[in-house]
Amino acid sequence: MNLSRGYLLALTLIFAYLTWQLVTPFLQYVLAAVLVAFLLSPVQRRLEDRTSPTIAAFALVAFALVAFIVPFLLVAVVVADDAATILQEVDPEAIGVAEVEDRIEEEVGVEVDIVGTLADSAEQVGTALVEQTAAWFGVFTHTLIGIGLALFLLYYLLKDGDRLLGWVRQITPLPDDVQDDLYDELEEVTWAVLAGHVLIAIIEGVIAGLGLFATGIPNAAFWTFVMVILSLVPLIGAPLVWLPASIYLAVTGEPLLAVGLAVYSAIVVGIADDYLRPIVVDRYAEISPAVIILGVLGGIYAFGIMGLFFGPVVVGALLAVLEVVDEHYEGLEGETGTEY
Image: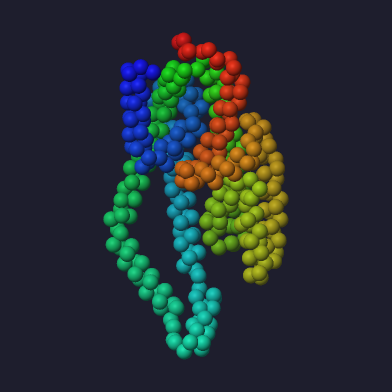
């Protein structure tokens, strides 16, 4: 490597690092924009046959705002409200706080007031929260900026996505046939994860959640969200929620509702998993459950909430790249570059 190449490589690494530092604070929103752009890119291409790329991209951004972002925010608010309700509904009398206080007084001869102490602690926490108003405002502002950034990125990814892919192909030092196989494998893996696992998990969780709403399970929205997340993980799934919910109904004097919920969840959700998943997965690459588990759990730690989607994609993409390497590596020996 001569001095000029070393200098250019150093500049590339420096500016790549600085760019990464700029992206990191809004990584969740950037990943969300990339995910939605990937989902809507086939529609963008079809619309471009009838109108300009600008109008098509703007229309799809509006659609994404209505179909993805607003519902996601509403669901987040409802789930958070249910979670807060669960915490507020903890009854000190129901869990025997009074008996605990009496027992302590009998044993040590000291009168205690657990509820009062907790109330004082709650008041202190409330005071701390008031003092952190500026911090909460900062979080709110960051969220608004992030959503705005995601919408702008989505617009330009849709409008100029094909040009961006063309540029990537041009600077990639691989023959065209290898790039074709590589991008086809990556696209197939991504659709397999999103359609064959994420979409199925959402459908299964919502179907099971309808049973919770119908049988009057408290805070059903929160538990529906939990079932969607659990359904992303193979071999676990929604039964971790609807089975205890059925037991809860039986214990609270609703045996018919308990049996109805258990039968509904076992049959309807089971049918959705047994028939809908193979139909969808057969259209795309078959992803091992081990890849999904590793991707989902590791993705949450690496990318936050967006890791639920990108974690399995990253692991699946590695396997796809290895397949391309295995198929084309020997043919690339002696290649010094790609002519365009």
